Length: 233
Image (cartoon, rainbow, N blue to C red; front, side, top):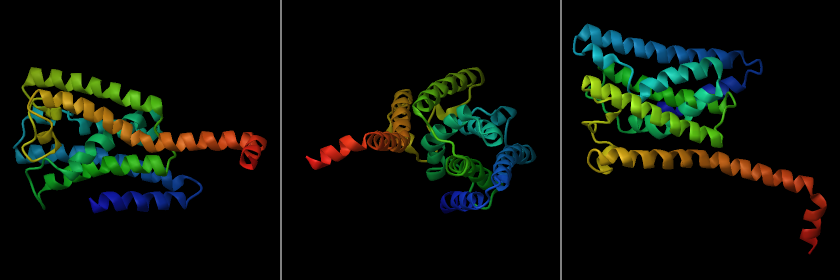
């Protein structure tokens, strides 16, 4: 968790020191390579260990979708992909870092792939935000919530067909997590929807405040005489 906080600070600072944006591009490509390499390593480790069925490798967890979405956002800085990554990453993947559902401890390879994947998402979102100038807007919040419903339906369909538990839609994680406080199945799924929307609003709030202050500053600079008269009264 400490590295998840420290690495974005280092990468953003290094990127801003290069006005040519060449370093920014290299860091984006490096983060994309990390995400792809981590997903490939997870499959290779599972196949070699022989402890996974092929269905376990289907990219149907939310963080799997986020990995592919962030790959596009990092390579092309596409706003629509960033919108999903920003809200899903902060509202969802962050819980995976704080309360990991991981049956293997250090130094098992799954320990490294799990944390590289989850922390890699947060580092990538932070870099796109503070180094690349992307940021969420009101439509971003709507897009992220609608996209979450698409994921919900897709994961539920796969779970129904294959008897799996992608997205923890059929059962809670074995390890303690926030889901333990959201009621029994299936009611915790409804609680998750409300919590997700509330989290999206919270993570958009700093940007909304920033925009409001900027609009106020523009109005005040456009009407200096009225402001002066008001202060005189």
